[in-house]
Structures are given as C-alpha cells and as structure tokens.
Length: 176
Image 1 (spheres, rainbow, N blue to C red):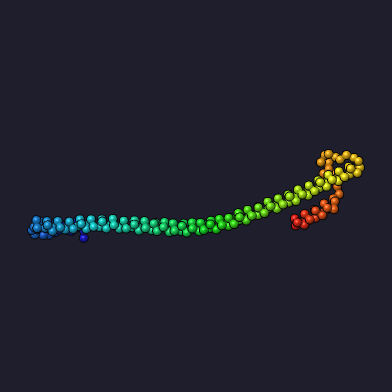
Image 2: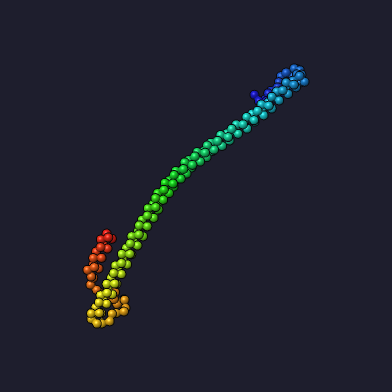
C-alpha cells in the first residue's frame, strides 16, 4: 500500500465508520513526521541507488571500450613490431645486394679497362704495322709514303706473323 492510499484509508475510517472515535492528532504528528521523513529518506536512497547503478553501467561500458581500445593498441603494436622486423631484414638484404652490386660494378669496370687496354694495344700494333708496311713499300717502289694516316688504316694489309701471334696471345689471355 502506498502512502497516499494509507492516508486516504486513514481519513475515510476516521470520518465515516468511526465518526465517534476520537483521534488525538497531536499525538500522531510525531510518528507521522518520522514516517514521512523515513519515506523521504527512502526516496533519496532509491534515487542515489539509481544514480550509482547508472554510473556503474557507464563505468562498465567505458571499461569495455577501454579494454577494446587496449587490445587494438596491443594488436597494432605487434603488427608494428612485425613490420619493423621485416623492414630490418629487408634492409640487410638490400645492403648485401648493394655490396654485391658494387663489387660487380668494380669488377666490370676493371674488365672494361683491361679490354680497352688490349684494344689500344691491338689498334696501335695494327696502325704501326700498316705504317711500317706502307713505308717499306714506298721505299722499295720508289713512291712517296702517304702522309694521311686515315688512308693507311683503311687500306687492307695482311697481318704479319708477329701480329697474328700477338692477337692469339691477347685472345687467349682474355679468355676468348
């Protein structure tokens, strides 16, 4: 029974059925005041309880969200660690590849320089042989030697034995 029902029943009884009953209202004021104060305190306690329950639900929801965020951060941290490790491995691989490429480039440069030196020697030998042959033929024929070096190089000359031997040695040394 609620407070309002109790009051209504109390008033109805005093006025209708027990009209001849004398009630000392002054004597009931103190117990009624205590009862009303207790009712108000119970209402405040229930309000406080509902506030605490609401805050508890909010706290639980926030905790769940925080735990999910923490797990996401932990997962992201693990993913970043894997990415860093893969990057370090790739860096080592690339460093090794760079060193190898540098060695190969240096070796190729050396081979190129050696081939150029062999070419220079062969060219010089060819030009000298051509010039020598030209000078010899000019001195035996009595015709003057051609001054133009381009003509000397463009005229076909049979290779001498020394020249063929030098070319064979050069080819053998080159690994051809």
